[in-house]
Image (cartoon, rainbow, N blue to C red; front, side, top):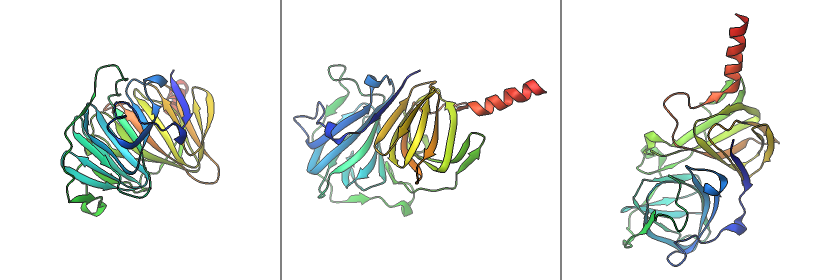
Length: 283
């Protein structure tokens, strides 16, 4: 089964093609791509320096971003939004997008694209468009207004805290998903509370994980890995994996899934089936 483990290194941020001669102050560090064995995901950390911009373009895929640091102005078609830490945005398939940083700090974000971007030199899936005047009306993210098109703000909640065989102290909140308008992937944030665990399971889809804080032991196909802030992991279709929280603080991460879950049987919890089979043998 396929999997990947790594760590984000700011020294690896570079201006990607085909933005080299068109963008200003834009850098990116890929985490998950075809080079890791993925076939559905393009996951990266992107950064835009003060006074930086990414010119208007369309990408022939669906894109989700989650702000990690700083402030970013994002224009989708003719609507502009101000995004801050813990804000997120969905850029629909084939929509015009423009990025601007007028702040004093770097804007850094987690960046998910699906279908997976084509390697440079293959079929062209990024096309630059004529830049539009930046609108005077910049929309701030206001959760009190209810769901806004394309954008939202993450607030950690514990109303779905899971306790079950093989699962303890786990909370996962999806915020980019089909109901939000996505069709290609899900994006979510998870937390494992102190002494929490998530037992072995697998999926008929790919998953990526980017660690925000805390520490955990991740087991993949019988191998153990210690994950800390800035680390990332990827599990391919059918790859078994499990987590257990470690250290003094809760373990928090960003997660993506692609394609989206099937309507049934998107998770196979190994302990559930082991218990069921044991019950069948004893009856």
